[in-house]
Image 1: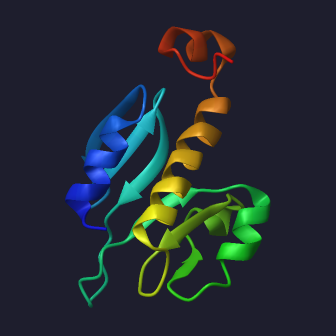
Image 2: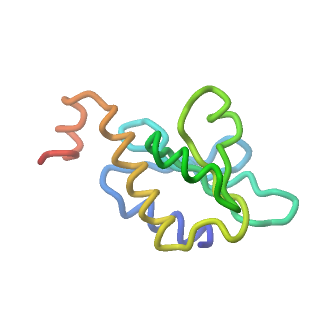
Image 3: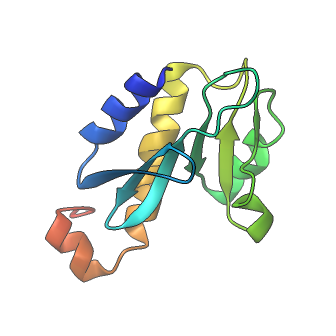
Length: 122
């Protein structure tokens, strides 16, 4: 997945906003809370995508080639994974995890804000 494809996918999810921060990374938020980050390229120029996952997914994904606990976030006990190298996830699986990250983060918003944004309404 390219950064352009990543940004287009995240933009299509409900109630998202985009900012560029943290060294030029594309940061996607729902209800003001980060759910995905595209950026922090390594020396190899390989795109890097960071996203929130469930505890079970975290335990499985952190052992997969091309994936790792997200620097900074995971060291603070958060369940975030970074796709940083090949083979990593194929594009379809990455889109599924980005969509799930959006859902997980949106569930952490207040019920009032979820209603205002039209999220998780049954």
